[in-house]
Image: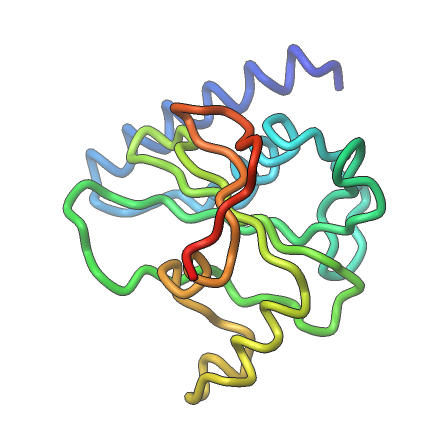
Length: 163
């Protein structure tokens, strides 16, 4: 499928998902696909199709050699605490995880990146059944990860972290 057609489909999906959420209060299960598209576009990643277990995309340029698992989360304006990202495939052959944060219009506003080592260390240090299964909060990911892209600044020239 040509990139232009895919961009158009994703734009229509964003509108539909936002309208559906406004109308029903429920989310359509499209956040992951939108996040994959946004991470690839903003970070210059090559999406894998078919996907490998735990690997959604390959890095290029400054990210060459990296194998990404991509996660997405829509964060509402209501500010509900305790947002979690989807379960990570800890057995997959990935080297990094990209977390795409979307606003209520399903538009990206920040992308964080963390290495496999950082993720596995954070999961090992935490307790609880969810953590052992590869679940992590958005807040925890933001602490251990690096902000690599934002809507205001685009690609971050000098990566900073929160610790």
